[in-house]
Length: 151
View 1 (tube, rainbow, N blue to C red):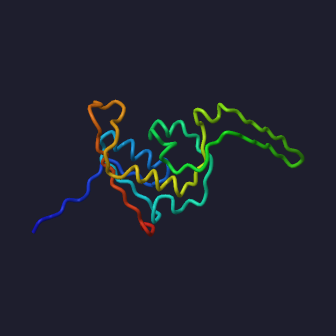
View 2 (view 1 turned 30 degrees about the vertical axis):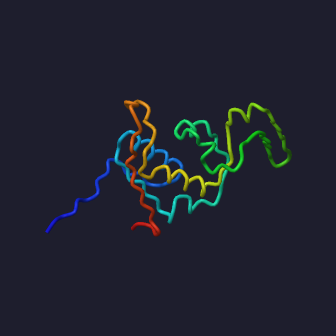
View 3 (view 1 turned 90 degrees about the vertical axis):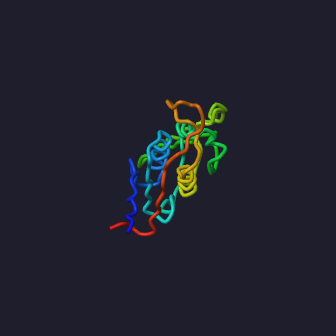
């Protein structure tokens, strides 16, 4: 009778939201074996909202993010209102410098989280910074989505 080896991972990341997916991706690019676990049926399935994402940081992790990711709109104007019980003040700021380079975008989290989780699947990735840079690397990130909470 042969025994099957238990899965063994160097890192287990709980939650396939933005932080969990980026963490799993970065660790896998550095050669770590990673398990990414999400409680929902799929990444983003629990999110019902979206928002503004300041995109320069994530563009460094995922070059081409602005062209590949499910971005709704690029922000080229900011309208901010400050309120209290008796008054309000509004600032309307529109400037071409907000558009080039792109600083912020609107996203729907269900779509974005699913896209990020797909980036964490085993695949060939660009070399991580600090690596030999001699060629592409294979990420080692196993994904597990749970359709019901773990006890």
